[in-house]
Length: 324
Image (cartoon, rainbow, N blue to C red; front, side):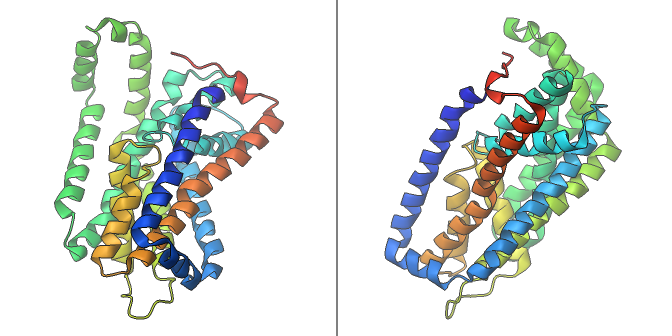
């Protein structure tokens, strides 16, 4: 299975290099190096620690979802399976994180159609939590408020549709008229039954609260990054504005379905910082630092987790077979 995604991961690394090159040209490479020199690098370990806190809370959400779906797996292996999926963070829309569903199937035979909807539920709660976190900053920033509210309304409607069995079954029935959908009808029903369990009121509230805490850690990371430059005359960015910028840029990147939001997230983040009269070199440097500490750090964590998973489980991920 892993071989199937290798090319996509390599493509994402190349795309990341292209984005870095483009931002470097935009900021002027020499000025960008000066900006990096002005950053307080003693804060970087703290930022990485906050990223780990994000992963920790998201793991609690993953554990809660597996409990809701009555999926039993040893805690240590569950943790490694969860982290292993981070290697797929640079796939479009993080859809590659369904990787953990295949690892679960290898471990305890859980059908992929039962556990894969967890990835969908995670994305829903991620979006809703980022909308909630970003809204106050959007009102203060005076930009993007309608867009943030629009995203929020869209996902509230989506949750309403999913939580309405009669309506959802009617939609599934319409889809089953297509031959290629009819062939996987039983898997579609299994997947819906799983997602329905995860968007019930109690389950949704608990996972949104967990998601808010998780993403608040990364928003705090961005706040520390952007205010960590010793630049004369640069405005101080308060936590609400920093949260809006990080949340808005993350949503923008996810909506484009680009691998890891590469390009869209980076451009949005840099552009919003420039709008606040922060020098281009500092804006680009801050963007590159936070992306290294979140997106690329997650990929590294995923690689390490895969190595440990293979050693402990005695399974070779290259031999895992993908379902169509």
